Length: 88
Image (cartoon, rainbow, N blue to C red):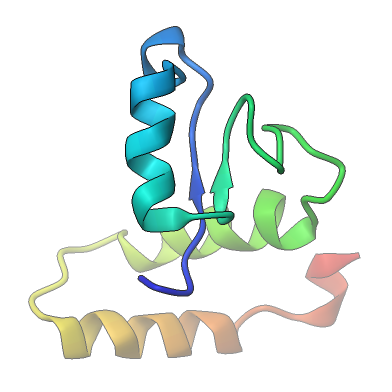
């Protein structure tokens, strides 16, 4: 997770100073929320954020995953199904 980003949904309870401070301890500048460097719905977000991640999530979790190895394999397989035309 050290290379992961975390995106808040901007609900009031999720954006209190205490909550943001807690999340910054772990995610540092990789936190996407109100009052952070990258605001929710930022123009910095790309097709990856709005298409690829939801597409992969829906595809990968369509059926039960039994272990980490299977999870990793599904990610690789589903990424291979994404065609260039889908990203335009």
